[in-house]
Amino acid sequence: MKKSYRRNLYLALIHHPVVNKQGDIIASAVTNLDLHDIARASRTFGVNTFYVVTPLNDQKILAQRIISHWTSGGGAAYNPSRKQAFDQIEIVDSLKDVVDDIEKGGCVRPKTVATCAKEQDRSIGYKQFCDMLRADDESAYVLVFGTAWGLAESLMSETDYILEPIRSDTGYNHLSVRSAVSIILDRLVGDR
Image (cartoon, rainbow, N blue to C red; front, side, top):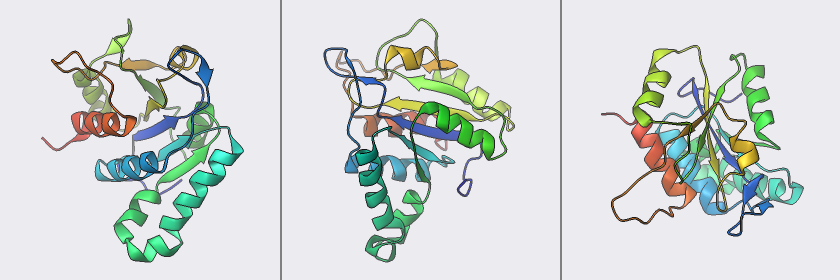
């Protein structure tokens, strides 16, 4: 396990199982921008570990190449603050691997909190989740974000909670996952 910044909050960026525009279950590609922006947001807001979840070997190799550039390659000396952000990324095959890794690090089984752009029957609000994060330092929580058009229902049904969607008064709701991560982390652990 990497150095803990906020002991009880973790983040998982899921690349499979996610859905495409037609609702088919797919595996999406890892993107350089997601790694950069989400690692920096995770470090800024004190996330313990940012997990990149993909079962595809070519995508794991690509992600590791990008991470290595910023943690031990030329990027590490060029931009030490970027190195700090990339140091907290772990690449795993599945959400189960995320949970197992956190437990292996000495934590109790973490609660998983899926994110979704659509209202769900069992959604919890930001205030409720903030209270949960602050109430019990012994519990661990994993914020689960989907790529492509979002998490597959099969994965969402396995999570402990689903966080209410980000809403605006425009009727438009199609944020990049990078933007959604930053907004949600600010709402949950931003200094107010």
